[in-house]
Structures are given as structure tokens and as C-alpha cells.
Length: 93
Image (cartoon, rainbow, N blue to C red; front, side, top):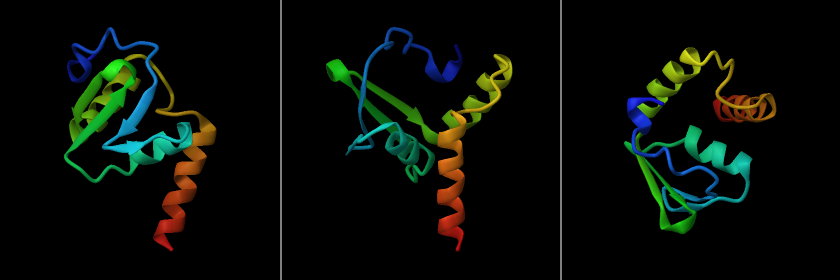
């Protein structure tokens, strides 16, 4: 729980369909869209016509706070984190 996700408690077990209007192909694609968001807000469309809307920068800050509070070592699994790092290095070249 955090102020950033207040009101979204009942959205468990729903599939993410779109992020900012882009249809999700797989978990890796979802991570890429979220991590590379260039908009002020992040819109996540779920099953059952449910929508999560967050201020992107506030959500990034809250993520760090939530991870620290619950002693979670990483924001994503090691394979997805490695993929994100590879993409960042490729785009820097």
C-alpha cells in the first residue's frame, strides 16, 4: 500500500491489455513500455474495462519507496532487468 496506488486494491488477478494505448505482447514488452514511458501520465488498461492512471514520475518515486519499505531487492526479475539494461546500452551507442 502507498498513496500512489490507493483505490486500486481490488484490481488483483486482472490482465494488462494496453499501456498508453499500445497492446501488450508479453511481460517483456510491458516492462519496456513502462520503463520507457515519455508521457507525464501512465495509463494501464486491464481486463473488465478497468483502468489504472498514474503520474509517471510520482509512480517511479513511489516504487523506490515501496521496494524499500517491504525490503524487496529489485523492481523486476533479474532476466527482465538484464533485458532493460541491454536496451539502455544499445540505445546509448
